[in-house]
Image 1 (spheres, rainbow over the protein chains, first blue to last red):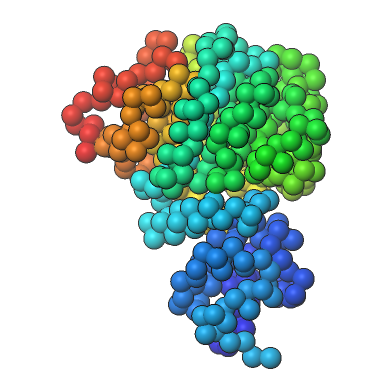
Image 2 (cartoon, rainbow over the protein chains, first blue to last red; image 1 turned 30 degrees about the horizontal axis):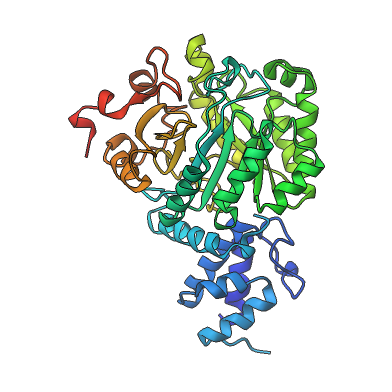
Length: 81
Length: 352
């Protein structure tokens, strides 16, 4: 599974949403599922999927689907173009 | 939560709570989550089932000094508690004291919420609360029928004002929680389903509180009518599965399958009265300390030495465990202002 696929899977499983919803317009609180509780679940899924432990600043900055990919670069997780 | 990413201290504590629960098989264990502070017990309504005896004016004028409110909040923050709930009585009867308390508590550190009957919560008040960094407002609704709600509450217009209040809360970007009390008397009523559906349709969160035979209901000796039975509990679980926006304090809010039980929250969420007494929860009127005499840390450590509160209970002790209710919650005159003292009712065998 590619990193992009893992990343998408974490979102889909955390929020129980379809892949079609994923994209640059997906931001915190723009769908009911991405609330505080959903945010915790998403971070946990990502930490498990990539075997990382995210820093608090990054969890706070993780405000959108797009921003999340940028932040994960810090953890040497690259996404293919 | 409307403002999670703007509250880094809260996020850190919530992450810690989430990770603890996850590693603890979805159970709350001895991880503390918050404070329920009865800021003032005066109320404008006379609800049949009030657990604080507000309708009889019990300690209506007592309040904690603001310095103590500040100290409680600081201690709760240091203990890693992420939730802070102000309740009453009715908080909005004394808005000046409420906003002074908000300044003392510094809500930016917590998932901070108010529990109110909504009667005085208009758009202007909702705006003030949002500006004070209140994250959520819980408003209790007893029925989808206006007349029924108003009769239970003892005042006309209380239903309409409560429903309007939830909308004002939502309009101001806070989390609107529609609280419903469910007991054996109404668990299967169409009314409950209609309320749940309404809350779902409005994008609110529904908080189910099981009815508890304490406060006004203790006197009416309505235990059989009040306490949910196995069929009622199954009904609540079915509602949880159907409407994904329903929470109970004993359910694991992080569980995506809507099945896991966090466990009873006694001592995990401490209840503090206007006299400073600390009870194990709002509904179990058992005192484990007083904030004028001990620190919250000492009080919590003492509370968790009592096996009933330390060990996992899949049942709400106050609303579902008949043995516990009969043994520890049925003393004559027991109330939040006349609680049983833990050292008096528990024996050495009850301590771990």
